[in-house]
Image 1 (cartoon, rainbow, N blue to C red):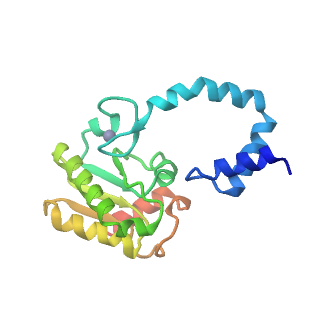
Image 2: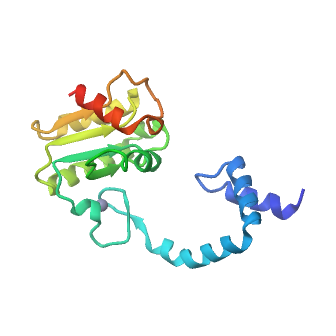
Image 3: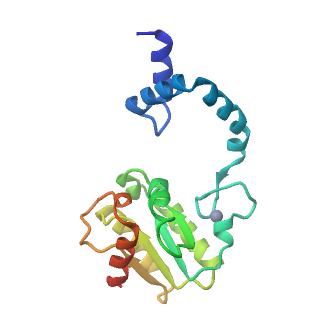
Length: 191
Ligand SMILES: [Zn+2]
């Protein structure tokens, strides 16, 4: 096996979202379309560097005031991670303001600092968007995520309605594989 190949795979695996399998697949795809990859990377590296996570809602933005935070909306959708957001948000009618928890493993919910930070950010988003009436948790039911919901429920204005995916969906399921509108229907029935 080529030493360089092994070195590339090892380096890629230092990145959070790369494991051995997708690192190998990445190298395979790169070799298949070498020229195109080089073009795309060199064209987009500067653009990528300019993007960042919005400090208020955690969505990706390159603007001083991000589009999502600027929306006036009575509802705020909360997603656990980016893959849920990208799989579901575009399919649900009228998803307006969103917040991404950026949680990729359930034990993150038990990290006190992370939890406090998330709660402060969600509170901030609600305080800025004074017309918020409803928070919709597009999060798979889990004991860990329940902690966040309970703390928020105690902290926030009692007039804000909390909507969540009912326990009919199994604990810890990957909700991105569910039909987005079915989930919405279940949430509304659960109200
Ligand atoms: Zn934002």
